[in-house]
Figure (cartoon, rainbow, N blue to C red):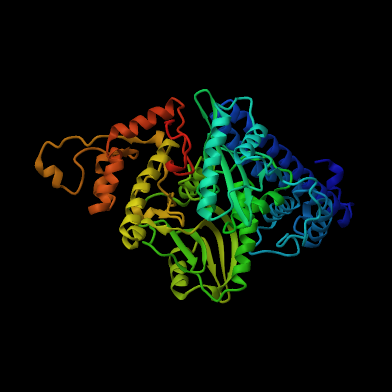
Length: 585
């Protein structure tokens, strides 16, 4: 930092002006680097450089913190002894607001300013004077220069429309047979129009200009219009021998909602005005929170801002209270929720119940591992929040007692408020053990089979859940099984899968302690049936599809694939939705 900027002769207004411009410069640096990383996704997909895309994902996830670290240091040097002068910060906020008023990503810029202030002040709750609690702009301060989508008007046939789309969204790698794929997609559209009782024709299709890249797939997202019907629309592109194919055409809100699920990693998509893209997606996915959509696009910090605003709006209109969440009480985490609000708050307990022996720091590192890894559509995203403040009257007496007993390191309870110094916030799902107990048999069987598939999907992404009890898994509103308890999660490659050594005496097998030495990372798959808690018809269904999970050979084979760099394609849609089911991955 230039010495003259720390000169005590600078007026407060000059400090505010320089500070605002310093934060603005840092934000521009962040966005330039974020976009540069994002733009590489097209080339990664084209060349099937999956390792490169994974590295890009990790780099992009760490970018925000790195830039905020730098601007925090610069602001500390600039303000010196006036670092916590809120009048200067209020002026700085006003100057900054004017500086970003012409930007197309003003909402993200506001959140970046908040990130800086919270680093300095460690604010409990929110401070309207120095934070953008609500945006400064009731309407967007800029107008879009072009729509976020391309329009394909009615052609001679639906096939013709799809051909035009595939032509415009081409890659250096050619399609295997775009004409054949166009006919397959058109047939799916015609079937969906008939099922909806719509017209037999498509008036137009609006496609988001940039493809969405994630994992080993690219997705073309849009909406189509047929008479009075507006139908969400997505094409899934993957590599096959010989080139690119359209592997699926998704035409239902639920299918595309799963594509944007909170259990998937974030997309890489090029966009000038995130606000417009989120509005477009919201028109297709009205049940998705604005914050969740921002998060799915990689703007997780602003997504947290929107989630917090959503929570405040809910609390302003509800008479409900926070209460302990359904399900078995956790040994490591205290989990609470509000009946009419489908999010849960997870706090690390002061002391962990036996046999858990990890530390608070280790648990936090597990959540950070999940944040940085490919979640394979099976690991629930967890957003970390600090210094949340709520009115005490929003908490049930049972929950207050539990927090006072088990979470004193994370919670301060006064006569009027509850301050939570750290929590993880996740979407609420139905615990799997409760679901299979209360659901109809067919739904329970489907869930228990998807539970096995969830374990396999995580394994192919180099994740072992550790504690595989049903209570640690949940069922989403779409019927997908996801994992949400991370205190024992680890990389699959770090596990040592072993067979049980034979005992020399019958008495050894009856003893409460094992007759052989067990290391920390030793895992015995043949023991899985004894503690999964699945019996009767559910066990028959599970073992009919996933009995290989009981074998050491399965797990060692997965480890070998990981060591060789072989990546499995995890489809964010059902097998029956594939257009090319004959291609096996």
